[in-house]
Image 1 (cartoon, rainbow, N blue to C red):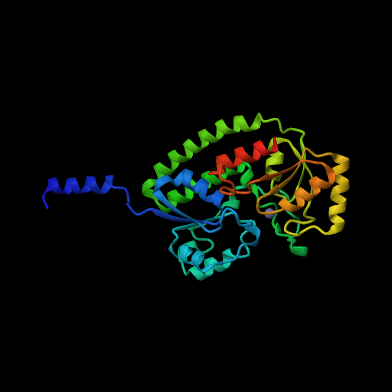
Image 2: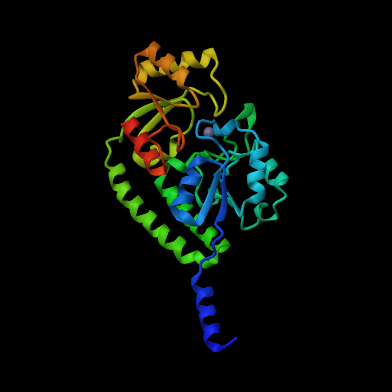
Length: 293
Ligand SMILES: [Zn+2]
């Protein structure tokens, strides 16, 4: 090969990004949404859980195992939210790259500090939050850390495009900062709610509103008649701004409590895609905060 050809070849090799997209498998829709912000067209995302599925009670399906088998990286919520199906999927995938401890196994909860962390492991009576509250996706502060973690993980797997992931992360941070200004100015401070599930604790902490009680006596446990009576008494006494449910959990119970007490009930999306307007994580936050307002 002459020197000229060699030089051309070197330039081509250096300039051509790898054409194969990084195969990202995420459990929950919001994780896919943040991954998309960082990976854009460089990644191909498969989301295992449907937007209208309750993430606490999902089961492993053959199609999920097939997706995991081909994954370069698996991104999941952690804090045992996926305990019912993910360990089986990882094991059955026969994909060494996504096994625990490998770079293709990304537990997004490692980047955040969980709220309500129990002093001892507690799954008594079927509590679905045994390691603390797993719903940190309603926290811009946590999402920022998760996005950074994702950018690092993608850069590790696809180092040739590390600059691309880093610049997307910066764009994401800028957009988040702008949105945060808007969100934190919404008048939620001091408002009080009753919620079906412990879903909005991170948001309550960051935006200064209060959740006085839960229709579920423990996360994942449907209320008894006695517990409902206690809730009716609490609502009548404390007069919350609203009773919150989601499209996948507590809609009926919230409506019935609303009828019995006169308190307003509001149904919110729990994840990206649960309503037509919650198209990505940003619009999910917009919709939830607007609903609370
Ligand atoms: Zn939960």
